[in-house]
Image (cartoon, rainbow, N blue to C red; front, side, top):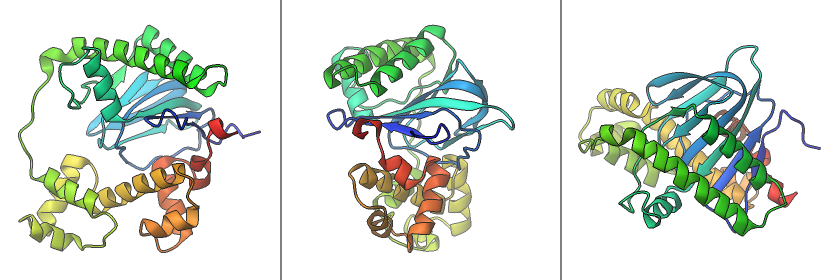
Length: 278
């Protein structure tokens, strides 16, 4: 019996594009600002929280859906003395973009960020919870679960895009994205930030300030976040925790455990477990 304070993860090897987490008692949960490569959506089941998404702060509670675009820094921590329960789902953006394109929900195969951080809509909220319950159940076959996912997100993005089509804008190119891409590609290296700054023509002080203002985390924290993402992937593949820690640049397993839990709100061992394997 898994304690209600422990996060529960659902994965299916035949549906590698989706991961679901359930937390029933997260009063002691604490997230450091972090980001995901995937598009994410969550449902608040109980309690209240402050939800920081990029530089936007929201108060969210039971009945709210929260949404996070890929690589957008966010954090969601419960209010003091408040209960805290939620579902959180991560979807591969390439799978989602392809689904929306082939069903004519969107006109491009390229991923486009959603433009809302939160949604209060009883129908979409209830349908999301119902879908999560079915995903974590063993009553449905994988193909039936995939159909549930497809139907829900076609409907959701039709609603979201119709509501925000008039405000979609295209941002100009920003050299900070080149720095972020470099940190992603070389996250296992310990290149000093002053050398990274020089490589891209910035002073160190300016880069750190500008990068944090744009990405809501310092270059060092961004690089660390990417290492945690690689660690998550390795743990899902069944690699040993000690081996993962060493492979992604942590000098000891205890340090990896601390950094991982601050950003994932679960220990590496909790994250590696999945209800599909129990």
